Length: 299
Image (cartoon, rainbow, N blue to C red; front, side, top):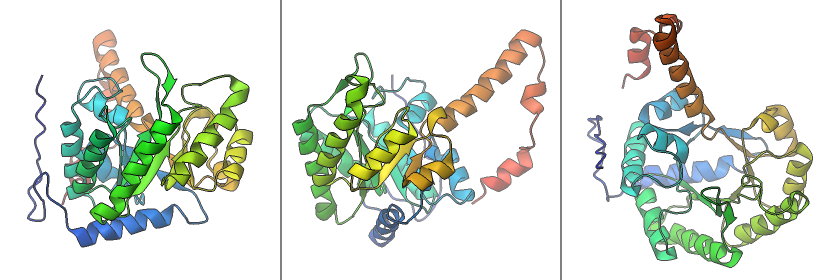
């Protein structure tokens, strides 16, 4: 099925796919994004699933925006896990970077390619679309949970890191290890496995290490103590005390797919009420009027 994404933005500063955005602006945003990872405080990275959600995050003064692979997939009617065509992702990134003026980081999951050269080509497309950060992960939860061979993942990260000099953009390479997320190995081994992989990724050129999953604060503290790189944690019910995370030394907290799931949950509850109760009160029970919406998205 061909899902054609139409760009509704009419702006003289927009650019065609495959050409570079204003290199001065992108270089500035890349340096800015690098810098906020090294401040002595944690920042929250909200994850967008379309242009509108990215605009909202910018309007509410977040310092940067990440994409959510799950959210992008849901918005196109698919489940998460590299089910959508990579060119759709490039198009959406292109549109987001045209519309907002803060750094954009892109989740490319496992890289959307079977070879390192293919992954490098895809990262190049994302950076050329205006992004200044990428996430690359080392594991997958479906259909069978697994972690990529460490040596192979190191080669991927090394190859991606070399693109910074080649493209002239010092983008943030956020290397994700899925040890806790997919519950790899025995529970008592996960901490040491995560530390080993994280340090290997950092030595290979990763600027930040993303360790998602339900992780106890004592283990977050040990991760930070043993990994000499900014640590990125995923917002979960177990990692919802922001003050404690900052005190522990977490530098980046990703909201992940939680915002898009919250939005769709509200929609589901609304349509369930319409179907089950023949009522529309949930649909109207908010202050986000047509006028307010138009004002929020005005350019």
